[in-house]
Image 1: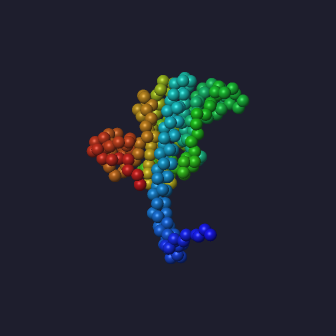
Image 2: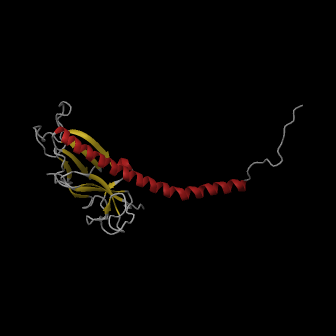
Image 3: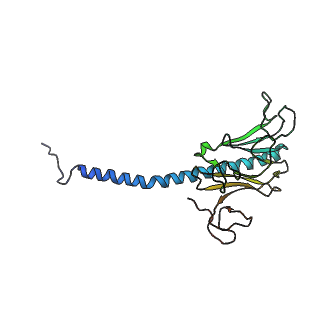
Amino acid sequence: MKRETVLPNSRGFTLIELVMIVALLAALILLTVPSIQAAMRRSNLRAAARDTASLMQLARLEAIKRGAPAVVKFSFADNEVLGFVDLNLEDGSRGSDLKFTPIAGAPSRTSDYLLGRISLAGHGRVHFWGATDTEPFGANAIWQFTDVTGESENAAVFNPNGTVTDAGAVRFADLEGRNFLEVLVSPAASGRVQVRKYNGDVDPGLDGTQYFPPGPHPITGEITWVWE
């Protein structure tokens, strides 16, 4: 008859051991959750700024291609970024009024047409927020750009020659207002688009602001992209 072999030291976990394991797992979770949340905030903020920069670059290229203005607008009310080519006025006639008024039933791309729409809520509740403002949607969330008649927020307007009508920047922050990024379009003559990060703990850069592109401080060599 076949015998079963029983290992002398084989046994299950005791209740005390299980409690200790559960407590250890809980402690590990408590330690890692804040760092995971911080990483997600950074990722969402960078994605919002990167997507906005990409939309602006697309708008510039489309303006050159179509020989018509391309507009990137910022809506505080909808918490979104909207890019479109501006081919007609509100009454349907040819022209540019910097407003998105596509003509219903018009053939594709014969009237105002959409280039992209970025929902900041879809990026982990990122907000329009300038670093020197105390709350979202403040006066410094959008710096310069072109005034649009009848609109509360200015817009980036790219021209068929590759320029932007007025240089400017749009700024974003995570929900807690700990980290700030801006998408800068400057100088106007080239329509150059770049993403920069705010660092209030270092000296202003060459342009007098405390927003910096990736890399060391241009004067002191300090690390500028520090995340909280």
